[in-house]
Structure formats: structure tokens, C-alpha cells
Amino acid sequence: FFYESLNIKLHIHFLFKKLIYVNLEMSKKKQDITIEEETDEDFMTRITQPRIWTTFKSDFLFQVFTDERMDEILDMFKNNYIHEESLCVYNELSSDQDSVDQFLYLVKHWISDTLSTIVIEKSSGRSVGIIICRFCSIEENSLAFSRLRLYEGEKWNIIQNFRSHLSQKFNIYQYYKSTAFFRVYAWFILPSFRNQGLGKKLLDCVITKQLPEMMHFGCNLISGIFTNKKSQEIAKSLGLTTLYIANYIEWANQNNINLPDNISDENSIVRVMGYKINQE
Image (tube, rainbow, N blue to C red; front, side, top):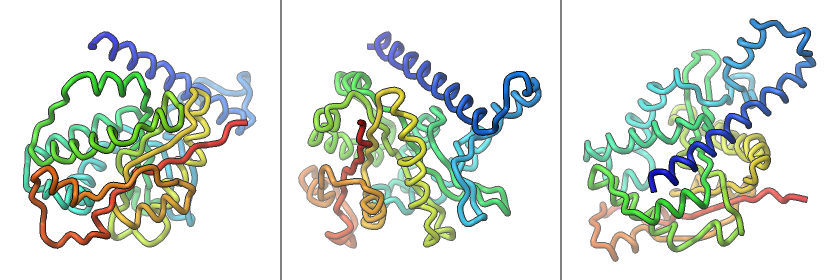
């Protein structure tokens, strides 16, 4: 399994390098710069600058995640995300330090592919939101289910068991007859920057700008697990359809998991949602 997994990762890494090359060439054409006109300094500046997808209301930039933002993003997940995301709250993830550490380790791993997008407030230069996405293949999925995956932290293992339950109930590869898809792992805007359309614009960037580029590698599908009503409504407004519905309270009760008493039935609905670009 180790060598098979290594080969898959090397193959995906090669595809990402090729995608970066294609993106650079596209960017260069847009700027109408010929090879003869571009100096070495121009080239180095261009390839080291973070790619900007779009601007929003002249106040925010939507750009590809870069490593120098890592600590800032991890702080966002530690100080905000785990206290607000539904599954984290229902399972009181923040009360289990081992689970918190495991989750932050995974966040760092997920965004290492540099396929995630962040929102930057132009006036302060700070990150105010992120959507973490990764390229997932059927080969990696087969390897994941062929071996037992154990995580640190009781609370995080509960969340992962539920996610595995969803994957077993709904096979996205079979449903779409696809060998790869673009997966949304996390999607978050800081509380003080909400109700401005930033969250919707962030997901829209992935659908309209990133996903079309992934079609070069046979990936024309995006999917994610949406754990609250607001995120589900935004996803639906952008064209994502519900593929599978689960009631988290029912699943927890069936698995003898204790939950807080204040969870409403409406807030316990979790949806697997997806969107596929039609290819001519």
C-alpha cells in the first residue's frame, strides 16, 4: 500500500506542476508578454506572486493560499472554526486537546496541495476566510478503505467515523461515473466579515475558476459535506445539488454518542452536495 500510495501522490504532484505551468502560460498570454520581452526578474516576480482569482467590492482579494499564511490560517481554525462548525460544536471538539491537535495537523496537510483559496482584506492585509479544496482520486479512495485509519483524539474520531459513514452510504465515483473530483474540506469566513457575500463568492471562485482548470486532468466535479442550513442554501444557489442527506442526531443515537440537548432537528441535517460541469 505504501508504494501504491506513493506512486499516486507522485502522479498527482506531477499533474499539479503541469497545472501551474498551464496557469502561468495563460497568465502570460493575458499580459501579452513575449518570451523575448520578459526578463529573468520579470519571470521570477510573476511565478512567486500568489495567484489572484478576483477582487470583491474593491475591498477584498481572493487568492491562492500561500505558505506564509499558514500560521494565520491555523489560528483561524483554532480560535474560530472549531467553535462554530456544526460537527465540531455538536461533539465539543474544543474540549479534547488531542482532537484539536489532530484536526490542526490535518488542516495543515490538506492545504499543502496549494489548491485552497483565501480571502484577504486589502486594507489590513489579513486573511478573513478560506475554502480548503483537494484533488481526490478513486485510487486514493480505494487505498483509504483498504486499511484502518486511526486518528488521535476521541472527538475527532467520532467526526471522522460519521464522514466515513457518509462515504460508504454514497459513492460519488459510481454516481457520476468519474475517477476524480474536487473536494471541499472546509469553508469558513470570520464572523465579523459575514453577511457581505464573501462566503458565496469564495465557493463561486472554486466552481467558476478553479474547477474548469481541473478539467485538463479529467476532473469536472466538485463535492463536499455541508453541515449547516446556511452553507447548504449558498451551495444550492450556486448550482450544487443534494446527493445524500443524513440526520446527525439519528446517527449519533444509533452509535451511542452523547450530544448536547440543544441541537434542533433542523440543524442536525447534513447534506452531501455536488456539481458537475457539463463537457461537450
